[in-house]
Image (cartoon, rainbow, N blue to C red):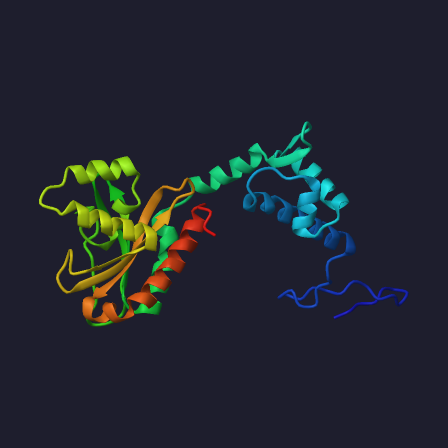
Length: 273
């Protein structure tokens, strides 16, 4: 409803209880929002491009006038988000950006972050999704999400499993540092190391592991790595179920799994392309 004042001039439109009828932002407010959005664009550019950047390069990347870019970079410098080298006249991320990144990493809870990806995997595959973490020379299931169906896979949480048996375990071994992997393999007995090494190499090349009946008869799984910001292995996610159901859809299940593990790795700070 619009009011009029004593001389009949329209007054400001009232805001309804649900916000309906609210006035659009004033020009100054719109300008502030626009400046903030451009500042965020400039800052995020430095997270996508390695090395330092000059004003001209930033302007070209973002299709902004150089005068605008220079003003934004100057503002970001005052907060420590951007550093400037007067010798080269180029810019890099500043210490405040590092502090923001560290604050984000400190609040990461892998199990919590993996809940939604695991639920989506269950919805799209109608099979069980699991999350494993490394525990010394073994790995354990940290959590699982199960489908609403009569015959389904479940896994024992917190029980240690060796790293050379089963899909999730082999992903940990395949993506372990070379010396650590070699030390583990050297301690094994009764295992064809040549065959195992070839399989681990295939897993790293393909990006995921496929396993049928290795750890549990009649069971199958596809498993893929989840990486931390520093490139180390944060965990392994898998889709598992009865082998007879999973075998015909391995390609589809692995594609869905890789999509979710890549997204989760990005959320943990790993620069997945």
